[in-house]
Length: 392
Image (cartoon, helix red, strand yellow):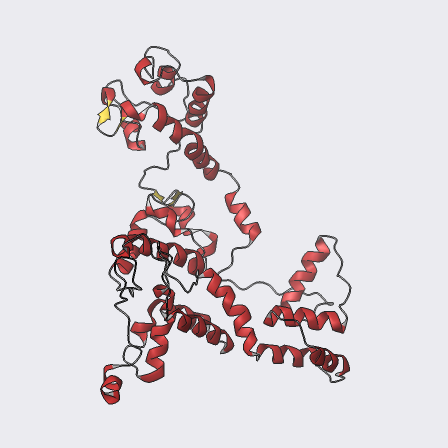
């Protein structure tokens, strides 16, 4: 799973350039237009032929011409109207003149050049095409020059030592064997070391006692439990369906155990992802345990939350839950924002969202039962038709 560094995220959210302009529009201009202007100048209600619900609308203008001249505050008809110079807008029936603070919001917007992310052929989901193409998280990995730091042996340590030195920080004291074993054991298994393990480690005079301990812990079944449960938290694992009666999911444990086993087997991450999203298709032509594993891995989809009283009527919410979770845990993107509009801060459009929605809407989800329909259905057998005939 791609991890977003906090520094990168903060630098992304810091308002600068086009982002500051869009932020001003979204936080201040759009709410003001919707509250005070669009009741008369939006949609089919384009008073005087002027529509303010899109950039194209105010660019085309109304009977008096374009409403805004980007960058020319005093020359823009919109500013003249809200300041009462000629036309006086909004009229009394629409709440009367804007406050000084509201006028200043629109003056600042026009002075910026009237940036309007609501439409424009050079924009994708709140950013320009160039910004989308150059977005940092979608760039291919590049080779980083190897640092020469004498006191660091491992490659990654060279970067840590260099960064620490530049910040004027020194190393923490070296942990003694008792502390080190506790840290390793808690980190890799979530459990404290036993007294027998502690005594053995304290007495180990081999050339690589730490390496021996790490290998033992990585080979422990508890390693998969410790780190598999973290993935299960990410995919919102539960043994119940989540709808109003919160029905039990009697087969959910199979997916839970598969995740734990995948960590213990050190399954490659790309395979881990593919099996959860399409294991039933990837293993469709296989037989026996191989095919069954592909089906069980798609428990990621089967455990998706159900909603309401009759979940058959609310499956669209389940599809949206899957899309939202998939975006966050596999892509590091909040795809759910594009459910209602093009994403403001990621290159994800509403069209992208509903293309993905179409995939899940055409997917048959296992039915766990609900209050008015208690019988589960659409469960996928773990044996193939040939195996089933053999059993019969």
